[in-house]
Image 1 (cartoon, rainbow, N blue to C red):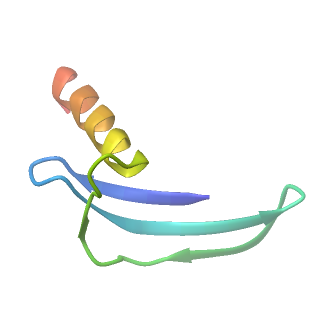
Image 2 (image 1 turned 120 degrees about the vertical axis):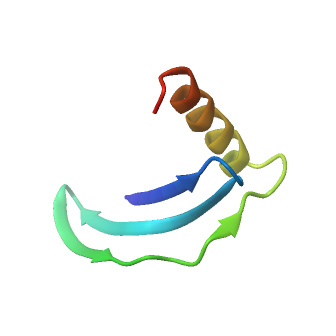
Length: 61
């Protein structure tokens, strides 16, 4: 399971948390701040960023 942080103002993202499970049991978990990166055009990451940022804007977040 991965958790990302998004910056809607400049369409960037970075990894925040990575957690691994095996058959429902926690195997490992890491917290760190990855390097900021831009989304790749026409990728799933770009679609997710656009969707999350549109939701945040619509809800005043």
